[in-house]
Amino acid sequence: MKKLFIYALGVCTVLTLAVSPAPIKATDFEGQEDKYMKICSSSNLSNSNLNTCKEFNSYLKRKNKALKNQVNESKAQASDTKANLDNITNEITSLNDDIAQKEAEINYLQTSITNLEASISKKEEELKDRMYSMQSYMNNNSYVEFIFGASDFSDMFSRIESVNELTSYDKELISQLADEKKQVESQKATVVTAKANIEAQRASKKSLQEQFQALYIKQNAEAIAQEKAALQAKNTSEKIDDNLAAFATAVKESEVPSGNVVSGNSEIGNAIANKALSKRGSVYVYGACHSMSEIANPNQSTFDCSGLVSWAFYQAGVNIGSNSTKTLANKGVSVSRSSMQAGDIILFSKNGSASGIHHVGIYIGGGNMVHAPQTGDVVKIASLSSGYYQANWYDVRRLY
Image (cartoon, rainbow, N blue to C red; front, side, top):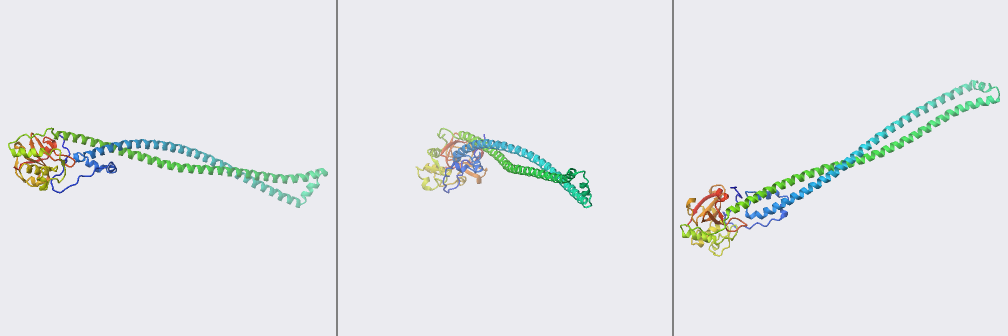
């Protein structure tokens, strides 16, 4: 049989008054899962926190469902972001190709400009040389001889015009080359501007790329964290499911439906057991029924475990005073399990020694006892065959 809800019966050892804990709100669970997991562990689960643990379990199931929805949403968002990121990356690749093309055009145009500049420089030098030669030619009368050596006036004018046309041609050629250079420079400026515009587009796209990349990483991280949290909530809920099922089994094993005393060899013992049984259903309150006025009150309605013992004995005519579980361990005489009879008290220890005594009940015969279990519970009958009671059994004492 499973060892369940260690210390579940509560500590009934001292006489100090205690206040029942306030109900726990669902909002208290947020961010405190570890705390409530400990409260709802198999070793701490009891009637006093049963409803809280059920609420906590429901909270975990809701949280798991909500986190799964968030995971799906985060993954969908990450998928959209990845698609945008891929599109932008493709656009940047295309822009890089455009920039490379413009750079090739610029290089070609720059080469053309350089060649035109070289041609202009060459023509200018040729013109300078020709003009210098003509100047020299005219200075030594060769030019005059060339002109006046004509056969007639028509030939003379023709020779003068030829010299002038030659000079004008050179100047016109230089002018054409200069115009062509300007056109090429204009084309280069246009291409440079186009390249600058494309580079600006690329810079903008790269900025978007970085933003989408950061967003994609963040969304993936969120999805992973949400999946982890959902799995943790699921695993914790499953553990609590097991704990609640085990607790229900233990309660079923420890409780018996009837409350009749199996008569023992002592009328006083039977009377003590019957007095305790008369308070079945009375509310457990930690520290209740420890004043003599409460113990002497036949209508007392609240008890803790040792308070119920003191009250039942007093009402049956045996005044043992006000006691804690530890003081009861030093009263009367110890008897063996096989010699138990109705009215004997049974002490339980969490560590097998007197220092660990924490609970007491009154034997009613038939392998059962009546006791006040813990906060949130009532005076009830329990079967001593329960694994918990067997594991924590300490001593049986007869006080009458």
